[in-house]
Amino acid sequence: MGRTLVGWSGAPIPGVDQQIVGTWMARTTWDNLAGGQWLAANADFTAYVAAHPDRSADVGVPLVPHDSGQPLDDLLDEVIAGAHDTVYLALGQQLAKLGPATVYARLWWEMNMRPAPADQIDRGKFRAAWARAVPILRAGFTIAARPGQRLRIVFCPLTDGADWTAFWPGDTLVDMVALDAYGAMWGAVQPDAAALLASLTGALGKLAAFGRAHGKPVAIGEWANWSNPLSRTPTSRGLGDFPDYIDAVFDWAQASRAAYLCYFNIGDGTGLTMAQTPLSLARFQSRAPAA
Image (cartoon, rainbow, N blue to C red; front, top):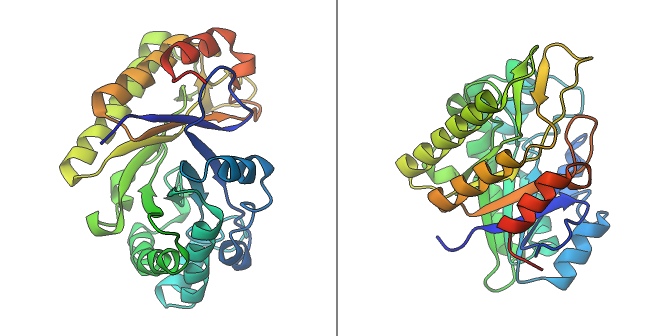
């Protein structure tokens, strides 16, 4: 494993070389998947790929259209039965056509989020659907790939969720294990710094150990500081501008030889952007490759 790539989704982070770009696909219909929708329409993504075709992208790829409102297990049953094989073939081709040299596909990222979707997914059906889809997705990518272009299937749960090992589909169907590792803890009480860092390092340590046991490189698909939304109980709570969290992630990445870190630089009401966290921005700039 070479150096850790550093990048982000959303707004640019000043003073840092964006070595990987993050984005997601639409997930309300099967046509969303087949067309790779949102990729071609994402101006930041397409501009990055045009300027850096030899670099990398982290793409949140739906396994099923999980925002469709249909029961998730019913959608998984359809996949298992082979009803959407042509969708995955087309999806693989779109990832190759629209992506840069290396495409990290985080397939159904955060599948273990509590209470949904984790409480609505039969783990066995999830694994079986993954096993049906991934070989076809890989085949589609190979059809359209440019010389040297690579697809990496990424298994990426959330740190603060249900037990993610029950979703594991098997070593041959995954190229990399990652986490979405926000600076937050679930609960009605705001954590202190020690508790938050202990929770984070414990989750990342588990990821690194799992990767070693299964012979897989590790990465972080999404990470960002988190606010403390007192109006929502219980929910995930963070410490706002917390630069020690930035250090903890970079320290772990160095020790575990992580493939990449992709910062979620998009304000969503609870997650905080770098523009909102100047102390963390300065720490990030000191640890990341300079532009």
